[in-house]
Amino acid sequence: MKRNKISRAYVTSSVNALLKMCLHLSLVTNGANGFCPRQPMVSIRKPTFVSSFVGKSIIVDRKYQQIKQSSQLSMMFDQLSSAISTVVKDFGPKQRITEESIKSALRSVRRSLLDADVNIDVADALIDGVKRRCLGETMVKGVTADQQFIKAMYDELVDMMGGDSSSSSSSSGNPMMGPVPNAPPASTLAIGTKGNPAVVLLAGLQGAGKTTAAGKLALYLKEREIDYTAVEADGSADESMTVSRLPKRNRKVLIAAADVYRPAAITQLEILGKSVDVDVFSMGTEADPVDIAKNALEKATKEGYDTLIVDTAGRQIIDDNLMDELKRIKETVQPDETLLVVDAMTGQEAASLTASFDSAVGLTGAILTKMDGDSRGGAAVSVRGVSGKPIKFVGTGERTPDMEPFYPDRMASRILGMGDVLSIVEKAQAEVSDEEALIMKEKAKNAQFDFDDFLKQAKLVSKMGSLGGIAKMMPGMGSVSSEQLIAAEKRLKKNEAMIAVMTEDERKTPDLLIKDSKARERLQRIAEFSEYPLAEVKQFISEFQKMRTMMSRMTKASDKMDPAMAGVDGGDMPMPGNRASRRASKKKKKVGGGGGGGFG
Image (cartoon, rainbow, N blue to C red; front, top):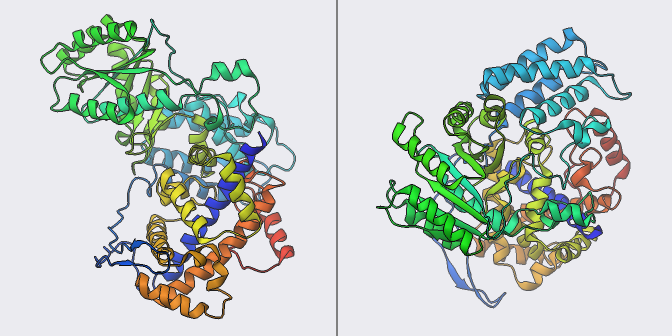
């Protein structure tokens, strides 16, 4: 259990330091070097040479594609989070909330919810709930008005999206409590057995992403679904453990290709199935979808599959023929789960669509796709409030592994600008073993972090998603603009190119570029071979020093408190409205002094 905590502390401190370094570098170089993130980069030749320093061919890729304001940079709740943060600041030094003082804040939040395309009835219900919580609760000693307001917003959002705020850690009196590490999602899938497989029927409109969702869901059930029955039976799971360390169910999944109308739909599903090592059952485009589903169920029952996913054709609610076909499929296979796959970018229309499909065929839940999009995010807040059906899964990216269970508490934390460190840690723990994390933690703690470690860290972040996407999930990073994140991602690529032309000794001993008598010659060589100005190389080395110092300080602090869950006293990641902790953090920094600079 202790090793798991080490992983969490290492991930949060190192990723936070890497983000801040890249952001600081991009801000320093913007303007000074004429760099504008919105202008396309000039395509420069790609020099290939054999380096005498590392003894192998190195390709320095200087052709940077224009990074558009993509889904992972313009996150779904940016607008809503920003508006709520502004409202919280307006509370000022008030120590208690009155009906008069909260009126303006609630009006602003309601306007922000509607701007985010939240259903108007859901928005009104949420505002009424927040008002009731703020005015109906006894003030806890030491809790300010802004903290009480955020807690009320958090609890109401959790309940509105299908969670249970009363059973979470937020009920313990701390106004800033967030998600519980090893808690199950609000709604899970039915469990099947060999000989009696659980049947999951997917429905939805054309273009919502049903076929892709089928492949993603199959991979999740096969490799990453948590066996909470085993967790309860074992009883040894530490409360601090994240789901990436809990036992998996490892289902045997069969996918039925029942979309015979869309060109290449079956081929697409077969390719997806092969990529995730899941069997796909098909009978061609001439077969009746009802027969395909029936025969697939028979195959799953006979051959020991415990889960069958049926991918159906996209249909409109007004298409009577296709809706009748869906009803016949449902009557034939008697699914345990009927999930509607809806595009989150349709906003509150996704909630209305869920209600309509539920009325027509009966649903057990929804899968929201494209949650990494740049839409305003009303779907996530509205679906359950309008349709009464829970969101069970969300698509978080274009890759096959990018599907996760829906956690209302984590989503509420993101909406309120408190980030979602828990999800970042879980992604990192899936890529980094506890042993590796322990080694890296000791190196960071002793300021022995080298350029090879920097590359490993950058590779880890790339596996977890884009730098911008990770930044938006870190507490305290919500105010960073998309332009700054774009510039930071490009700066990270530049840094990797500089490291690529260093010698092995320089990578392992950064002091050779700082204190060595030939340090300037080394830097000039790196600048020449990487084709970057010497000033930029010097700037990178300087910021790397500060990064090492920051990671050392944060890692030492984590020995006393895990920053992944602390947030408040982590010194570097204060939560919204926690004025006292920010002041305490500043006092500590003034007293601490010491060398190495850092980012403060």
